[in-house]
Amino acid sequence: MEIIELIIDENEEYSGIEAISVVESPAIEEDFIALKNEELIRLAEISKEKRLLIGAALIPDKPIYRKSGDHEFYIYFSKETVEKASQMFLKSGNQGQATMEHTDQKLEGMTVVESWLIEDETHDKSRKYGLELPLGTWMVAMKVDNDDIWNNYVKEGKVKGFSIEGYFADKLNRPKDKQVDQLTEDDKLLNKIIDVLKESNTNSK
Image 1 (cartoon, rainbow, N blue to C red):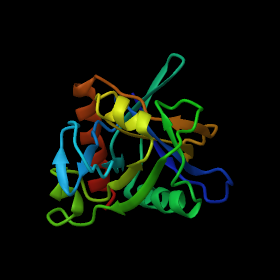
Image 2 (cartoon, rainbow, N blue to C red; image 1 turned 180 degrees about the vertical axis):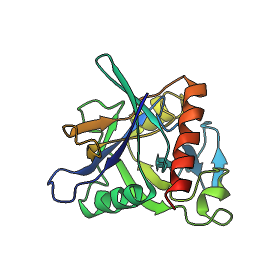
Image 3 (cartoon, rainbow, N blue to C red; image 1 turned 45 degrees about the horizontal axis):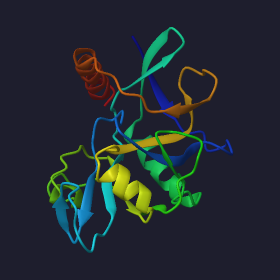
Image 4 (cartoon, rainbow, N blue to C red; image 1 turned 180 degrees about the horizontal axis):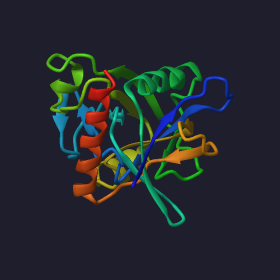
């Protein structure tokens, strides 16, 4: 199956990530956590909630399944592209751009208030909350001031992670398209692709 590396073309006006969607099944297969007063909570009824969602927006070299018509393939982002995407997201002022399950309707009261790259396997902030993610992962904390989303979706477990929306080019020179994460259940094939990516990165050094 085809494996395509997506890249950012900085010369294109609309290149990069324009929004972060909260979804039930994030393609990167990493759920976010809901945070209250520096404690990890399990979406229980609580008081004085901070209403923060913390999770991965992009994981480098993580294969993401896509299907266009009958064409099935995988996309992935290098560490360099993940870093560039995280920076351009903030430079473009898209912190308040959020959607639900990739619908066209923008969610009000949803703001990215923290953004960082994991650079230390032991002491990164994500480790504090039990998130074991690879170096180079783009982490975000999203403030949820939207009562409907917090009470009826986050607490009810209807949304479990982040998923990006944006425009990227690829190294096969295919027409640039808006990339939206999709989830695959084919774990064996996914593991095989991860091995291929790791071997490719090793050989290129």
